[in-house]
Length: 347
Image (cartoon, rainbow, N blue to C red; front, side):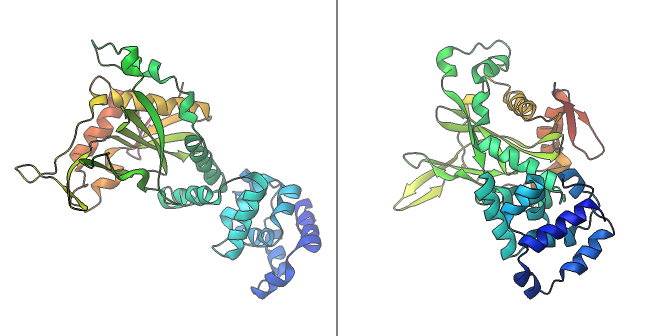
């Protein structure tokens, strides 16, 4: 008998939550016999993500306590079991076990899983773990390791010298969507008003996490990032941010329009002396290098979410998207591929 089959059977006999398993209508030996048709050679994530009998194996391991799976089979096996097991109370119990054992936040795990599936149509546990690692790194402050003053000087527009005093007013801040959404409202800067409520921010992230460029405590630009595969850190959003002008009437804040009926917007003063797209692409590349990615990508305009939406205010024309993304990628030395995205090796 294959050694991994023997291990699974032993763990089931010693630790299996048999009554609950049977109440669900499952039969252990039916699952085991199914698994024997294509047993895993080991319990590494690479092996488990391949052609093993996913449902049968994840079903068995889901009904063995998380601490046992982690101790006997390893972290890869436990993570893989959680990713592959269908939505259920049992899936939540596995996530709680992962948190107890490893400290991983279940909400971030779910955000990573939904990003892998909804955005990439990828159900591999390795991809989920990869995305989770980036979410953890961004929210954990990896951008603090970037020498931002040096980057700012390198990306100042031709003929402009940034003083030390001015550089002190710039910073990078982590951005993330609310709850477990792969994209959506940014938790800090969506519907955020300034102190006198004469302007507000409405910031939407096209990725689970990103970075914001701050100048004088105001958000000036956003880069939205997420892995697109195990080797690639992808930029899904590269956007200058302008506030929307408002006026307070009673308890309400009303958006102001100009004479043509267009929404009045503020300026992004911190971007004026910078090639800010190059700056944020460079910061993303540096973070990718620190996390072990081999290349950086910029999503092409044809793949941009906002050219497909029918939202009247936030719709982006194809022409605009190609200019904002493909144009920038080409200028910065990226090469296009068949998926209409642009790529460059991280060096």
